[in-house]
Amino acid sequence: MRVLVTCLMLAAFQLASAPSHAQRAGEQARADRFVLLHAGTLLAVPGEAPAGNSTVIVRNDRIVRVAAGFLTPQQAGITEGADVRVIDLSGHFVMPGLMDAHVHLRGEPSFSRGRAVRGQRDPATSAEMAFNAVLFARRNLAAGFTTLRDVGSDDEAVFAVRDAINAGRMIGPRILVSGPAIAVTGGHGDGAPMDRTGDPATRLANGLCDGPHECRRAVRYLYKLGADLIKFTSTGGFGSNTGLDPQLFPDEIEAIVQTAQMLGMKATTHAYSAVSIKDAVRAGVDSIEHGFLLDDEAIALMRQSGTFLVPTLSASYPPPLFRVPEPESVRIRAENRAFERAYEAGVRIAFGTDAGTFRHGDNAKEFELMVEFGMAPMDALRSATVETAALFGIADEVGTLAPGKLADVIALRGDPLENISVLRQVDFVMKSGVIAKQGGQMTEPFDYPPVSPGRLTELFPLTSAR
Ligand SMILES: [Zn+2]
Image 1 (cartoon, rainbow, N blue to C red):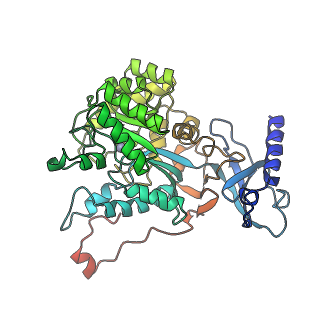
Image 2 (tube, rainbow, N blue to C red):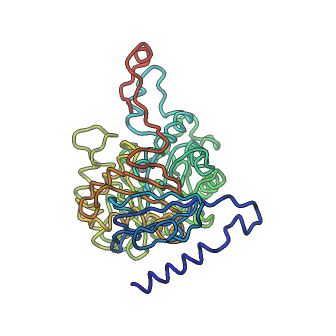
Image 3 (cartoon, rainbow, N blue to C red):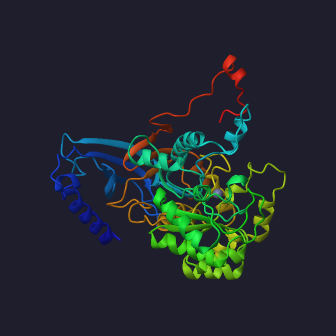
């Protein structure tokens, strides 16, 4: 172990003394910014044992070194006069930023309830969805989620928010966007108006396809639009009241998965029925969303091929979207115990919640459900870091705290390995080396109190503040 640490430190020193990108390019180099994080407990690699007092040395957006003890800037080899901040997290549990593989940034239940005023339109307009995505992306970041996968948001609103964050125009999590989920006519995810179901432009904009030929075109269209991944709906779903049975033929599934992967994109499918899950796994899909009706054969296939399960337990407990006393989603999930059986069998689990069907920012309740249903707390942490990074294809950039990786770091006031609920209160968030939250407060506040009652609110009553 000590030899390994020494090797890592040597590698880090070489990295620190190597010329930066800007210098190599012969451009005028901007002065480096350094941050030293003094971590009381450091879980650098979820799955491995945490360390005691440690220092994470960050230069600009990346980690250059992880060292034992609390290093001063001088001990860290940082030249005097350099731009350096030392952050005291000596009373904290420090770990990599969390990732959620299944969110919908376009909305959440409070939004639908709060707009039952005149002129209500359903679905929301692009402008409303873009505004929601700005607010909800930041709320996810405040909850410690530094990377999100938006799997189905109807139009281009979330692309715009992703691009604004990437361009540094606003603070927010890294977002991988699928655009509209691909669905067949009349299937789960078909949002096209009835009178335009046959219109080619409407079909493309809504991710609609029937037959392998049209499904290839749908994937290529989303690629052109700027999608990072492809999401398709193989079966019906609770939200659309279309049942849970197969809706796509194997040749349609193959066409979608193969075209996505040819273009360098991951493919994931919303699927309940075991038949569709198996069709998708055989076609080489990267992950199964929900998967509530997994059977033993599907579990064995997924294990064999390394297909990830994204459990989305939170979407069912409690289910604000459906607002009925005993929803089918809870009964079916509890009866079949797909998550529990898949975990026991060794299927790879990638953390994903379906935030948007419930309040954004409450994503951490998924950890509690995972542990309640039998997952070891360390495995739950790993599912939201190492495993999600592997599923997203960005494991060389994020997922652990190691030299060369992007500095996505969170800090908690308690130990989640002893009490998983401490993940509900994230005290500190750094994304790509920028401190977004410190001492429990966002560095750039965004959550304002609602307007006090008065003439304006009487004219436009708000039934829900958030
Ligand atoms: Zn969903």
